Length: 244
Image (cartoon, rainbow, N blue to C red; front, top):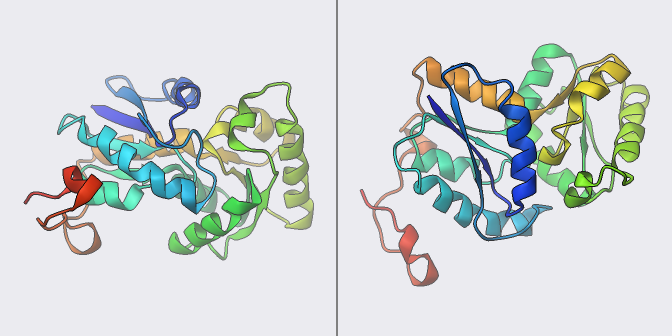
């Protein structure tokens, strides 16, 4: 079995961080392939960055041909999940969906700790889309840019802890969801420290896709995820034109 973990931003060190965590939990016989967007924004912080991250994401996935059994999209905005599902028939999941649905399994409520305030509306929309809006008490921004999470001596972890404490006491959250792929290495330590489930979506998504693929389940080809109809695409997007 071959699972792709793709980072839709162009920062390879973030891909390496996700791969380090995810490679420890895959089952024997599962190959995990890490991909990084070859071009585009170095981090995804809001709608504008997300729009320019979808073409390189689709390019990277298309380059793998049919030799994959599932895809994890390693951005908490779940960037490009829906078009990727329309392009592929294997299971595709974003780390936000995986983390939120895991939180509703493990607790009656949760709060999300994300990076910047501009990401909050995106994640509120996703909570509604995934049917988690009642369980999601609040989405909190620690106001640390994505790439600063890689600085071990920076303020990131202290600010994340401050928001977790506010969520547990102020929101009465029963679990915490870490709302950025750059937080993948924090979950175990914070779970032990706060004695509640602290969930990051990368490893949960990898195990979810791995399980669906082992069950032989595919993405539906009816309705919204039907393959795109053949038509002309003009200008710079000619190479993305679907071919029935």
